[in-house]
Structures are given as C-alpha cells and as structure tokens.
Image 1 (tube, rainbow, N blue to C red):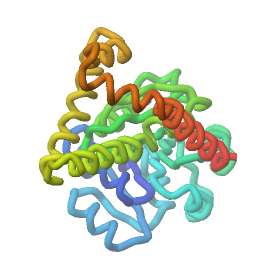
Image 2 (cartoon, rainbow, N blue to C red):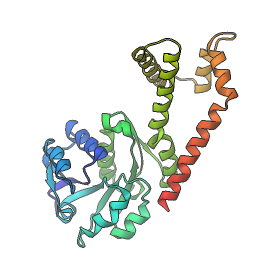
Image 3 (cartoon, rainbow, N blue to C red):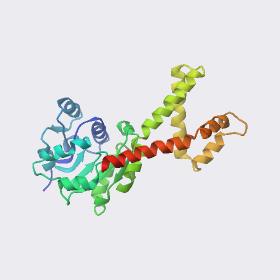
Image 4 (spheres, rainbow, N blue to C red):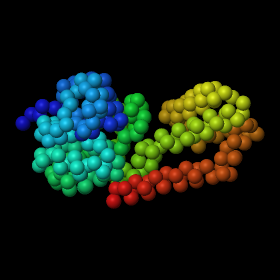
Length: 268
C-alpha cells in the first residue's frame, strides 16, 4: 500500500533541520512528501517554515512513511519506539551516534532494513561527509538511490561497512573539532606575530581551505605535497621540524584513537 509520505523524520534538531533544508532546497523531495515529528513546538515551527508536514504523533509518522529517519539522541531511541504503539517501519535511516544496526532491529523487528549513517557538522552547510552502511538494501537499487539521494544533499557520501563506523566517527564525525582547533591555534599564533585577529583569521581559514582543496585535486600524495612546500634551508622546513620533534602526527593519532575507543564504548 502506497504511503502518504516518502520520508518521515523523527527528531527536528540541528542535523535534522540540515537534512530537511537539503532535501527540500535541492528539489530532491517535494515538501508535501516529508513529515517530521518532535516534542518541541519551537522545533516543529522551524520545520513548518520549510513547508513540510509536522506531527507529534510518531505512530502516525511510522504508519504513513516509506522511509523513517531517526535523527534523535541515542538515549531517546527506546522511548521513541514505545510511541509507535506496535507500528513498525519497513525501512530505517539512522544518524544516531553509537546505535548499532542490531540494536535497532532488536527494538523494531528483524525484518526491518536499516541504513546506518554518520554525518558531520559541515553537513549543515551542504559541505559535509557522511559514512553510511546500506548493506541491508543491496538487493534494491531504488532504495540505495533514494538513501544516497537524501545524503547527497548534505555533502559527500562514503559507503563503508558498519564495523568501520567507529573509525568514521573518529575522523569525520569528530574531525571538524580538530580542524577548528588547528585553525584557532594558527590564528592565535598569527596574532602573536603581529597580525590583527581579523587578518590572522582570513589567512588561517583560506590557507586550510585552499590546502584541503589542493589535496582533493592533486594527483600526488600528501607527503609529496608537504615536500613541495618545504624548500631546503627555507622557512617552512623549520616549522615542520618543530611539529615533527613535538610528535604532531603521534598526538593526532592518539586523539583519533581516543575518540574511536569512546565511540566503541558508547555502542556496546
């Protein structure tokens, strides 16, 4: 039986609103084919501004949506399921951090198909990256195309197996914080060298942005790009020596490992 809505979204927080803006703003889905639920009137008011259908009735959402996207905090999952009152979604897209596919199926039913995703903060401006396991949908091209279409509205989609999701979390999910810290450190250092904060901010932000784009476009490895900046006896090599002496790579590795460890703990 054909559903009233193509996509039902449970939760209307920051990331959910980014998804809604992406799918409706790109014309991937017509607003009338999307329904959103949330306990907050303020959150629903923001969704209404996008032209989508809003409800506080999760059972209604599940019964009338072809795909149900969980965009709620992990600790709210079980209480949300209770509100279904026995209704079971056929196809689930989850962006809940640390909630494994098996846990979702244990709560909803083994026949439910689940795509587990890990988006990151830049998804809110359409420049994010999303790791996703869609293996439950491998037998249906239409499902894969729809889920990919929703996620493509937010940025780059990388298909990975669920056992890599903790690593995805530690690199891209939490990664923006590492990059923000690096940019902030460059700004502070620039101010100490006599720049105004505004001047240092422009230089730092555009340097990080340009360097990232260069990596993306280049046909040579990142280590080779580093060598190309480091002229023998020049200025850059002196800075790089300090970073190497202070174990910059090791610190980054330890930070990523700590993040992945915590991600594993939360999913158990």
